[in-house]
Length: 61
Image (tube, rainbow, N blue to C red):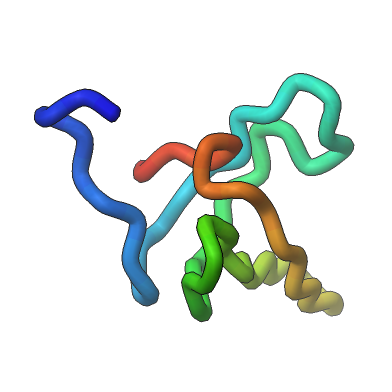
């Protein structure tokens, strides 16, 4: 991990950077972080979705 990278903490806005994920490019809000994974809340119009990602597949916006 680079020293200049900010840590991903609950309350952070992130974007999914995993090329294999159908959520690639989606921006969301981190709800919780445990065991090198983060639960990210996506909100869009009439739907909300909470998905868990590895921290390495997320980037702070």
